[in-house]
Image (cartoon, rainbow, N blue to C red):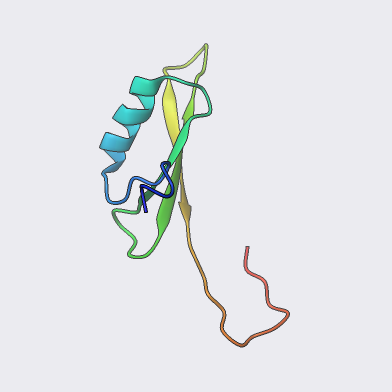
Length: 76
């Protein structure tokens, strides 16, 4: 997947993700990785530059849900 989606980094640790994003240092840069603690979940990690705080990353866990044969049901 990483050849088709360069932002997908697969199974890397949160620490490795933070190091990679901080090394880039570009505000708003992001990557998607597999969650270390929740099987099948993905994490969207975003680099945030803050003047008053230490540079940091924000990690959001993303759950994918596939609904087969069920209409008019939405998951957020």
